[in-house]
Length: 488
Length: 84
Image 1 (tube, helix red, strand yellow):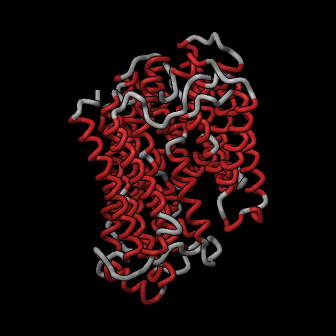
Image 2 (cartoon, rainbow over the protein chains, first blue to last red):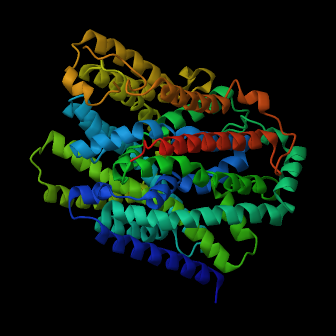
């Protein structure tokens, strides 16, 4: 049988299993909005572990990670660095979020903050910002999926078709099963991703150099500048410590605040499960190590690959590996993309309805209607993202640059919500708006980025300053209410 | 506004506060150790450990420190019956 056909069959096999798991899992949750969005707050440890692991590691990890190692060397180490401490804050504030969620019936991130600061305006604003952050991220997942399909089938399944197939499957199980579908498929996909990463990450250096040690030895002889941080910048020049360090910082600050991620706190069955997930998370995250090895393996053996993100599929298809292995790789890359994409599209629908539409336009929306509307919007959002992925040449990578900057502006909200009783509604709103505006300005005018420090940091600084000063200048909130939230 | 700003709950004992404080300090330490100005001190290629340049192995060590700190905290909380 022809090579590409075997590859496609293996991939289709993966997709069918994912579809089955995703659709069948829907029976486990109630038909309420709480069932659809937070799985009735019943996720056990295994599902939480894989949801947390697989949702955050996306096509970026599988394609961008090796791509960074390949073209920028040790600059890629920042990805490993932020994963180390990124989720730890949940150990401390997670249980509080979950308890409040149980008490007041929260299903989204904005639910908590809008309630804390008694601000419907904040709810809608957070929803809009979340959607702005989600869209380019989702589009990139679809592009990644299409891209991998195209390469491994040697062009017979073009990117538009590949993306449509992969995300058609996602749409079916997310529509049908909501977050249960996300959780169970992420478990399957997470295992897949890890197995692929470790398998290929150890095998490829062995094939190309005789091992990881010999590989790094060879690199230290030819390109030593690739092995010490901060590595290279996107244009090939030396990256700065400011750029490298601030990238870690904003990734850490934003990590636990991704709205599609944060809302999973509500899904955990109890405090113990939540904390256990955080404790064991590094064991998943460590798969970034072999992923990076693959990128490093490409430097001396496959020079001149463009774009750098193509390095992993390029190596895999160039080495005359058994077609089944290539098929498994394709499935693994799709798993990485889909396990993030499904959480994004599901969360986007839930947030648009729960935090924007319901709060700003129709507060008396009943539960059944809300669920129906979320499902409908999931389709619409997937459609919009697909349009951008396939038909529009609008550079969403540029938009993604704003995303982490915007996301970081939620951090002051978190700090104020639990640690600063004197914060007021005008204060947090002003801080958020000024923070986001600063991000836009600093991203649009890179000359302002002293030492190439990320715009998100500048936004955070402005955000905190404004939040504190405006809060102090406005009347304090009601003691009784605030006492429900802050550490006392 | 009569509520005082606190980092740790007043319900915690001094010993408990110390433990949580210590773990927090460890994590802030690990966070800072991944970047300038601490990382540059360990940012060299040799010696190779487990086949990796020291600059990379160093980060792996930080992962272990994080993991074992939180694991220890979890076990400690569990022994004290603090976890539901």
